[in-house]
Length: 434
Image 1 (spheres, helix red, strand yellow):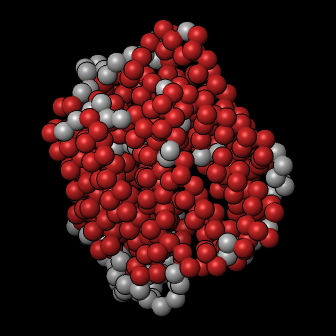
Image 2 (spheres, one colour):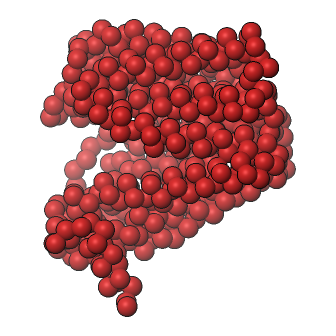
Image 3 (cartoon, one colour):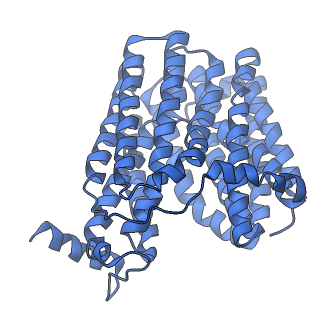
């Protein structure tokens, strides 16, 4: 059977509808290519998500910095650079990308650049150590995040041009599920092998991440995209800055942005759990596997619960998730201060990380749902643009938490970020229920 015919048959079965090509908001030529593009996008997204798992900034990169004996203060920059480094540039480049009639090559270029960054990090791990290695990885992470921003903008536009509205969620869903299964398999493999994961193992992980991003780029290049609309779409940064007055004039929105800034603690705390485990347990591959497994299972199991909870009260989700984050941090600090030997058991911190990831999923679902429910129409767009701009800047400022870890110890950084989470929970109680 011809590949095109096979993809059409699989597509018809997968979407499970009599008329599987219900094309909405895409032109007739693109409609004919939907089955092939559907599987091409799923496969390319699968490899990019697998690359994300192999170079996770909350688990893998902190592990690598600790192996290289890089300064502890660099830990605080990993998540902020990864998140804000891909968020803020989008505000400047989105209008340029949307002036391109064919945008898939922007995604391909961004994916290749991410692959190059991963391979360069592998070279750093193999040849350097200490502060020089740490700063080299931070520098490469900046470039990686910028490349990720290119992919993020282009991906949304290409998906909108090639896949009908009623199928777009399935593209992301199937690719995320497949990548999640492979990540769990990787975690189980590390647990079973139980070998020390030092320089050699970290090099292999990063090279593998670079390899899968290259595969993603090669596959994405096969997407059949026709030239599209190039007009419209102003500079998002200019638009966001022009609407910063919302922070002054709109009290509920201002309070939400402050709350969201405080709730960043759920993401920023994560690397410190990993490094604390290395310091107390060691560098066995099984320990890294437990963290990867905890992260994957927590996301898989908690998302449906938080989603239903958010439909009832997104404000309530933020409050509960923030208190959970704060309670976990205080517990870890107390345990490290009073019974540090308990943290030497290999499963203790991964189990606590499991609950931290559940809390982080709650924060994400809650704040995304809340900002959508808080306003309607153009005001909603303004809220998202302004809050993303502010949060991108706040993330970079909060990267200084690494200095606390360097000066006082990792457990103190966890405690301070947890205090921010508690403050966020209290402030969230004053938000209007949207």
